[in-house]
Image 1: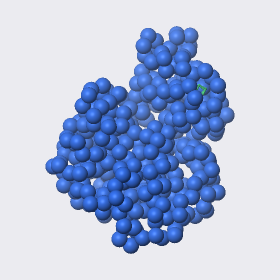
Image 2: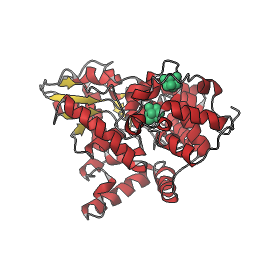
Image 3: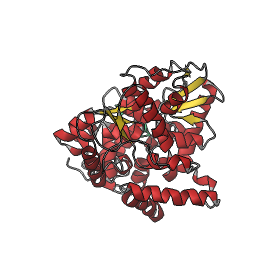
Length: 387
Ligand code: SF4
Ligand code: SF4
């Protein structure tokens, strides 16, 4: 921890520049530029850390263009902890980009995400603006529905068999997914509750944009909001990945114990007696969110829980990222869209026109904006419960 980026030196030197990660990197695949590859980014981090190069605009761009999908990490034979290296680099750089981007991020991440009531109020305003056709379609925002914003029919706190973590944007914009998840959880015979006060946001978006102190504060509140030993079920792959890493993020035994209780929705469901479902024969293409496949490595469970009701079809792109990446689709729209084009083509090759299963709200919104019919595994299961 000696250079300006304060990176873990062991992680940094672990890269032997073999290049095996390159085909798994969406930004390298789209641009063909070495500096937009994991190997190029690690070389750039090393140079800055050693004082051999400045953290100039080209360096900031190379780091900012990384989707933090961690496809490289899963492919790396040397175990380079790329995700933690880039998170630490983002933390050292702080917020990046033009003033309007930093201002928008500050409003979204500092003001709204930590205050869920305010975020939901802002969502009602956005919904009204959409009805008045004041929101440009090019922003790619989902079409909000008043019915989805009805309060969630779940008790808060108590001693449930499982907690369902609602999150920030997902609870404001895609609350129907939580309704479906709760229905499926109950169909297994489990009593489910939502967290007590403090579970406004998991901190993932903050961590990925270099706001590590705020991410830690939010994480500590989330840990306190769900006491006891019951499993914490998360139906957003991005949130679940960060919550499983709270032990490292907060560095306390309590956070480590909490992290061990966190399960992705499908991962938890696969451990329960299967709920009764009707076999539909319908084809579903599974899209693996990067934070489910490369970070949680729990993507197999999605197939397990869906296969009794649907015909599962795989894509041929080895789980390549779709380009959503938290705020990435908004902050780097051209690159995010070029990466998405490849995913859309892969889904089209797998089963043209089929429903797509995705366990992450960011991927869902990004792919829906390209015209695909994308549903959460919980929604697909809730549809066929009890026949
Ligand atoms: S990150 Fe891993 S796979 Fe990529 S070049 Fe370095 S050692 Fe090879
Ligand atoms: S995290 Fe994803 S985008 Fe970033 S270098 Fe690795 S593979 Fe490429």
